[in-house]
Amino acid sequence: MKINAVVRVYLRLLSAFIALGMLVVSGIGVYYIWEKLIFPEKELEKKIVEIRSRKKEKVDYGEQTYREAVALLSTGALRGGVERLHELMKFYPDSQYYTEAKRVVGEINVDRLLSKSVTPGKHEYIVKGGDSLLRIAQNKQSTVGYVIHVNGRMGGGLQKGEQLVVSPLNFSVLISLSSRTLTLRTEEGNFFKEYDLVRYKIPPNSPSQFDTKVKSLVVGSGDSLLPVGSARYVSAKKELRCERRAVPIRSILPDSDESKYITGFFLNSDDLEELVLLVRPGMDVHVRK
Image (tube, rainbow, N blue to C red; front, top):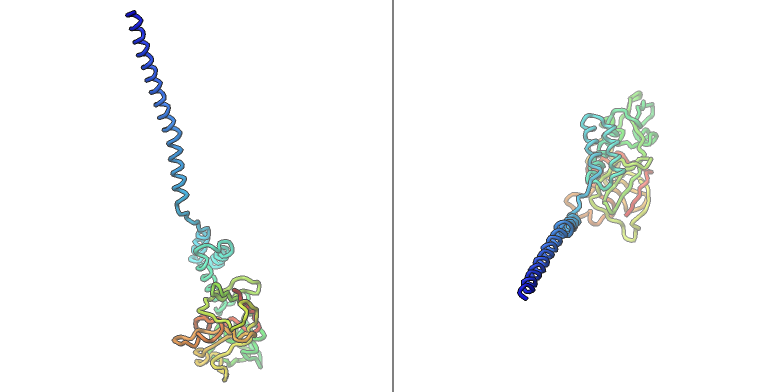
């Protein structure tokens, strides 16, 4: 009987040790599963949530193209630089450098056109007997203001045999009401120069989108003829009238409330002075929302 009691005690102790061993093994298994499987997965999920919650940085794919263009322009490689800027404008319109690229291209285009150097599209004209600036400008699809400006003239008097640099001006005008811009486009429809609209006012009951043409340039009050190139001409108020009435392109009037009540498209005075050199009667004007 005493032996049986001892055996039972040993069996109970053995069972307790076995249970304890199983508990330890289970604990180790749980720890292993937590450390090796569950915890890493939880951490991974937390990192995924954190990454997704981060503000995504937008990649500017036009930046490299812009920097390449600037590098080319800084070394005097004008053509290559302009080509890179055109590439940026064509393929990366969402780039932060898009607006600057348009500004630089526009300035270069105008500088080329208004310089006296003969570049593609420009040529020299020999003044003939009976010629006038108006006749030359009309025959060469240009403007009197352009011929005077490019050739550095102070007046309209011409001498037979005189050499003038002339260029055809074949642009169209695109006015965007939403972006408040006026853009000159080439005959092929390519970008040439963009100007900011200071403001605009469409006549009542007029459509917000329409097509028209430039009719004439009016200088001053339009009551008297001001000689092109004279001091009065340069300082006089100018406006480009269109075939559609009440939508001229004019300069904003400084320190005046008059512009609030006049219809048309308003530029700052410097931009309008440049525009009237480049825009001639008959050019298409497209107004879009």
